[in-house]
Image (tube, rainbow, N blue to C red; front, top):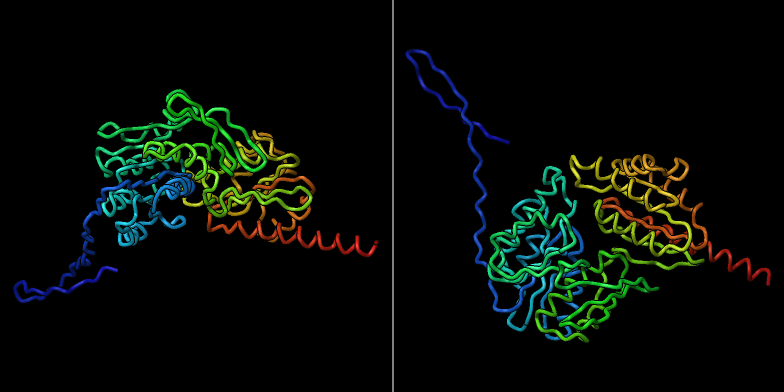
Amino acid sequence: MVRTRVKRWRVGAKSKTRKTAVKPKATPVRKEKTLILNKPVIAITGSAGKTTTKEMIASILRRRYKIFQTAKNMNFINNTRANARKITDQHRAVVLEYGLLKKGNIKRHCQIIQPNIGVITNIGTAHIGNFGGKISGIARAKSELIQYMKPTGTLYLNADDRNSRLLLTQKFKGKIIRVGTGKHAQYRAKGIRFQSNGMSFRVALRNKEHTFFVPAFGEHNIYNALFAIAVTHQLGCSIPLIKAGLQHYKKPERRLVVNRLANGIKVLDDTYSANPTAVKAAADVLARIATGPKIAVLGSMLEMGNYAVKGHKEVGKYLAKKKIDYLYTLGRDAKHIRTGALQHGLSRQKAVHCSSRQQLHRLLAKRLQPNTTILVKGSHKMKMDQTVSYIKRKLARKNKRLVRKRNIRS
């Protein structure tokens, strides 16, 4: 609220008054000395995969020496400020996650702790509403890592991500290393194979191919693993150490966690966050690991701004192409997912927009047939994890009833 002050003066014999605005005092900018360390300081940003990539890198480096890492996904500026106070001389390497909500955020992270190694996982549609609905705006904001990290440091980029070409790398004087599955990547994955509990793939290191394994699904996790391999290999980690770190990294909660339940039912819990790029990646996993009916349960993707309708419809179109058997949506914007799916061939009987969580759960209860695979995903505030919990409880109660019936018959 702007306060006003009354100013009086006289003109001849008459008195007049005039209201003048009093500008509120500007909040002083917090001046901090940038923490510059003489050790590997790895900062990871990107629209998706930040936390997983951080955990993979940390899991490898921890096997070599004492490190400091961002806890969980605590990647806001205040978290980085707190981290700067916790890093000690005993830490031989630092692995940080830099989050982005708006322009200038990555710059502030770097002004608090300057990285000498930067990783930009990809440029997608997360928080696109804060950038006028434009991918180019996100790319410019992510480029702040390139501008404000150590100028002669090492930068790791995704060679296969088309939007990463929008990053401002022209003035960067350091070393750029790219990962991917194509010929333009220095660290290149081949022979990707899905197994019962994860994926294996091959990477050529010093002209010799090595097989790696990650206990996770989705080709997007191949890129996360490639970043971890590239960073740690450049830092001198041995191949056996890298393999062990990847195989035992701490998987972030509610990020494509596969719950194997009774009667061959699988629930993919990917309920921590959502944006079009991430939902499509999750749909790929659903299509890949399902052996029976495929169900997508999707909540609204938030912070999409004027990209909301288009982004949700894109997801619906993608699901239809993946031949999803049933689609259930929840939330105001999620209805556009259904619209997009209907426009591209999914029938009205198999695509339902739910007006409440209770309705969603009633409909899902009828679909819990043997060998069904269910993907549950949505933005954090949509609380789609409640639906995962409901499915688990429902199946547990159903199994108890079956056991009782068997005991009575016997």
